Amino acid sequence: MIEDTQIGKIVDIDKKGVINLPIGHFVIVNSKHRLSNLYPKLSIYGLGSCIALILCDYVHNICGMSHILLPKTTKKIIKYPHKFANLSAKLLMQELINHGAKRDNIKAIIVGGSRIFDLDDNIMGFDNIGSIKEELNKLKIEIIKEDTGGSKGRIVIFDSKDFSLYFKSTGQNDFNKFTNSK
Amino acid sequence: MKRNNNNDKQPGEFKLTPEQIDTLKELGNIGSGHAITALSKLLNNEIEVSLTSADIIPFWKVPELFDTPNVEVFGIYSKIPFNSDLSIIQIFTKESLVNLINLLNTNDKVFIENIRNIEDLDDFSISIITEIGNILTGHYASALADILSTQLIPNVPIVALDTLNAMLNGIIAKYSQLSDYLVLIKTKIALPEIKLNCIMCFIPCMNILKNLFKILNIKYNMNL
Image (cartoon, rainbow over all chains, first blue to last red; front, side, top):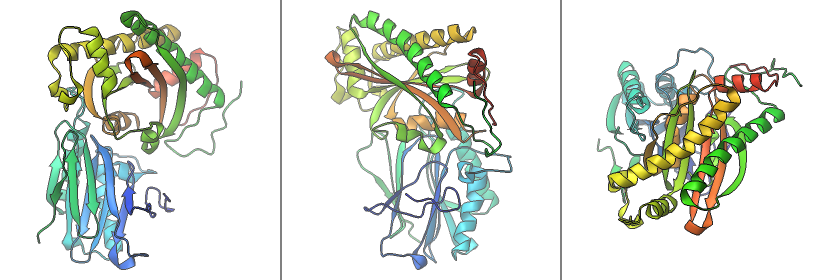
């Protein structure tokens, strides 16, 4: 896995064509600028309180995903901005636009924010969901699919070939599939 | 005693000297040693302890410290209230903990095939697991407290059955709000006769480290 000079940006994929996205990292897939014919699958395993944010421009075939850990930060100097929901949403959107996406076309999918350990003060997942929805609302980006909350970890796989989302909670046998019908 | 020259550090980054890492390993050995002695007494069996490892790593690399972070395991998590909290989590393979429950509860056997979710465990099994957590964490914390000349009283442990990766999210989130680095001290425990495999992890907050090093007279210079 190679990181771009921009900290947290993944630019390399493994032999199976899967990009496993660590916490605080992001990836953009731009069909126009692909170097090979591979359409990578973007995956996150072990999504607990973290949020997987996927932004898509279905018209221009550009998508991106980030792996968010925390709701907000007010710090100015951040090495891994995609750690934070309030920064990742707008930065990921901007990255898509830089790659040719049109702001009005961009849609969002959010997965995660569960509470694995059942403690009353364990509200990290809950806060993450609230924060990402607030940010997407501010940016006027519609959330077309959401699988959030609950008490189980999740696996998320986004296939950049046809923009299908596969998601599954711990304890489930099969993946659920979501494809945007529009 | 060396002094760190930290002029070249980024915000949110800190470094530990090899001496400090060794100190943390030793701390983990002491803590887990106490915990395992107590568990041995309960089980009436010798428990193998591997060496403790102490790592300071970027938050996103924490899953890499474990061999199989995406396999379902039992996690017993305790928060220890302190200036900014410490965490102790014990990770048991599914098989291990079921074996342990069956060892301690000879009346109703638990069958691993029936356990898909934490809800599949009956109350008595959960109370056995909680008690194991109490024993391990309690003894680990009391050993630390002795060294630090303070009180460290863990909260009641909480059990979860999920992938280690998912369980760690919340802990990583908590300890990397202000820093991009976490310190994780882990000790592997094994009891081959009952196929017990457990990893005890201790994640200290920065204040604990500061107190510890101060107390142990090692000079440091952290830039948080």
